[in-house]
Image (cartoon, rainbow, N blue to C red):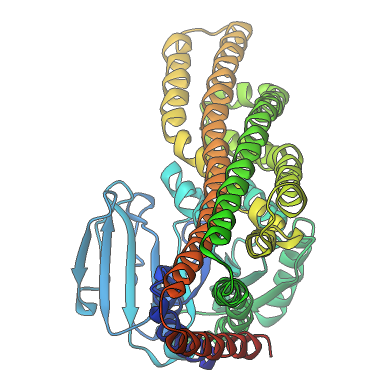
Length: 543
């Protein structure tokens, strides 16, 4: 994208300006690296054996993904344009480098491999340079680590692509639940009907209408687009390509929105630094020391008030967690007869319980946690703008990070955190459920009386509910507290960053007090020229 090169050039120019003042430019270096490899994530999801991997193979016209996998050997795989490199990342984040000729990679499991990355030199992938396709394991794999792998992509995805086989055009409960979560994020959804050669054109149209009707009952906040593809015989992937081209076009908007605001915020910090130097150039040593003392006092008072607000919010978190616990327990309690019946019929209850718990957590986060954290962040914003700091430079930049739009974006990110907690704990819960259900079979295998079996199944269902509710709430509690701490840490870092720039400005002015007038005027002229360049950069991004 041209805008990527534009930003890379602007960052380089900004670095050359600010390096003269010996200020911290690590943020620019980090942004440069991030922008250089910018890609939006587009996960391909669906049930096991819906043809996701075959679809991607047909797209790139090479068998880079194995289609002979079992649920145990399904590993998340990222595919994007690059110079023919394959990276396997294990669960300890160690990398193993492979070659394209080694594809498709087989015999890996989610137990030993976290992720596969495929950088492939392919004409179509080059056309969608800023899109990263992710082949995710099937929802019905029965392996809870896959749930966690799927959840981790929600926050950074632009759109999801749902593959549905035409010979089974139904959505299982776990997919319906996940789509409902995507709807909470207002995440765009594209649907690909796979294996289309198996039915007639008329049947395909009927299938499209059926699927659209089902999904529109779940997805209410975003547009749904449905395409038809075939990966075998007469290969047909044009609809898939069209969707990915559209995602690429939207990627440009995503890029501008994300990095435009980020870059302007940094440029404003530098502009404030240069303005501060000009505004305070005629102050004496004693006046500058007073400025420094007032700055230190203001920041200290602000952080003290923030700490008080944080402590008060911690008490609200207790009520929030209690509400989430009650929601999970109530939902499981209502499902007790169903769970008991499944146990009596020796059916796995893991998927059903997973859906119940995820729904309860998603709704609770939306209704209990998000309103509270939004109110907290607005209170902090008001405190910064009114109560504490006199320095307009710090006010401006911290307030900018706490606009209503930014607050909404911040709170939206807690959902993946909370649901990751569910995914993390469901492995151990699965073992507990298996043990409990197994004890039912052992103790009732020779019992013919249906009442006795029903009673024992109810007892086991009750134990399962208690275990699930307790362990899940503990996990979600830990995640949202960690998330809250992260928000506060980021706010404090922003404040200290502004203070560091202003401290540096005062120190530079103090140094100039003792130099000759001619040299002083020369430096002031340089500051004005650099200030003008920074302002031009801000205008170029906004125009």
